[in-house]
Amino acid sequence: MKVGQGLTNKMSLEKGVVRKTSSPVVNYFLNRKAEAKLYQQFQTLPDQDFYLKPLTWGFDLEQNFFSTWTYYPNSYTFLDQPEKLNDPTTLTAMINVIEGYHSLAVTMPLFEPRAYLNKFVTKIQNPLVDLASYQTELERIISQWYEPEFKVCLSHNDMVPGNFLFVDDQLKLIDFEYSCFNLALFDYAGVISETLPANQIKTFVELLALSDKEKTKLKDLVFYAYLLWINWATYMYENKQQPIYQEIVQLMDQKLKNFAKLPF
Image (cartoon, rainbow, N blue to C red; front, side, top):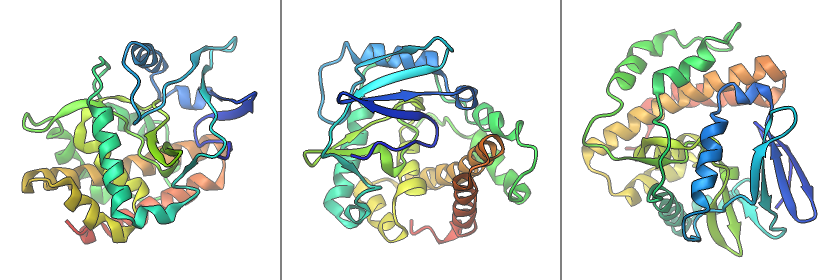
């Protein structure tokens, strides 16, 4: 596994331990106290093969949150081997580890879709794309977020390719800083919006074996996820001035324009 710099944290490696350290730019929108509470609860749970537990965590002298993790030198993610996403067996494994994570018995804050999106919207000075035409549909989706028939549980909320780690070919989830209680379907929307190639979305949704109503809800959550990513990346670009965030905006904007072509 390569230890590079993540999109939200500073990463370092020393003596077989990976250290992640946050910064004020990301602490603004991440609930670090809830993250620490989650890691505390992890330690009381039996070890499971579908996720990694941190070694230590806390706040440094500058009040930046840090966590440390065991380094697995021969591990890899979908960033290293994206071709694995074309294998239905891998897609099934992804669903299994997500379901495992959803089953963890912990307590966490509830995701608030409007308030969280507004953390970014209210800070953006110069939008990189015009999102005005999507606001009516966005409002409908947010207003109907927690309908009683849809499962709410511990959700990862950050299904990027680098958060799926293969250790000895066993797939595991890592990086839990966005975790909170949310709709279970939101993680599957994250897989679709953040990780899957377009030609595997249909197969992935079929493997989920959803009802028609669940598919409709999933599509709504993908729509929200595209808009969230655009606003998140715009906020990050304004604060860090790194081209990668512009590229994310452009990618998600293109996906949003092609939303009607989702194959489910």
